[in-house]
Length: 240
Ligand SMILES: Nc1ncnc2c1ncn2[C@@H]1O[C@H](COP(=O)(O)OP(=O)(O)O)[C@@H](O)[C@H]1O
Ligand SMILES: [Mg+2]
Image (tube, rainbow, N blue to C red; front, side, top):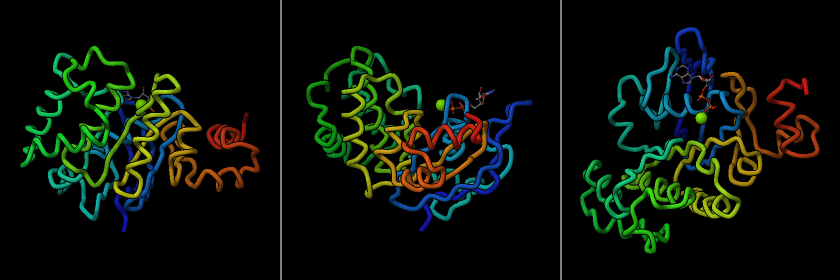
């Protein structure tokens, strides 16, 4: 069954076309990476798929529900960890978790929070104010918060942007543990990230979804030696 399907999805900002008619199909339980350079249209796509902004035109179907008709029902089964982390800087990690558990009206708040604390090993930072944490920790907390409503679909927009290699590898572990349990849509412009984490990769360039496949398929298709070379060939239309 498909978790996400789009049909000719378009988003224009005045005269700028950020997303140019993309058709996506993502299976339930899949870890799908949207890869592309800055400005390719990844964040705009994620914002539309998660109901944060409305498309200019086109169709979005999430778990069989139409975004235009069922945006509130859809929001119950998804969550987003946005590109600019959405944690409250002056609250502690515990307070952030409690706050969002309140927003989502989680029934057994303490139980859910304890679950996330042990899943993400948050004990040591629980009483710290979010703004005092390293970028890696902040992102980890942001992903934990994204799971507070036990979403079926989780969107992670550039989860490892600007992190050092160790923090990044640690987040990869966290994301890998979600594999198969959740449908995860991740955006990145790091090749190795898309290659090592995802089941399939969609490559965006200038608002278009130029190709979709497993890393191995994209390598084979382009005749490239590495996935990075395959990406460059696909994203530039073979001009580089
Ligand atoms: N709110 C906006 N108003 C005008 N242009 C925007 C807006 N949001 C994004 N864009 C433009 O749309 C294009 C795609 O942006 P974005 O989706 O953020 O790309 P990515 O996440 O891949 O870096 C860029 O050219 C960006 O400048
Ligand atoms: Mg972005």
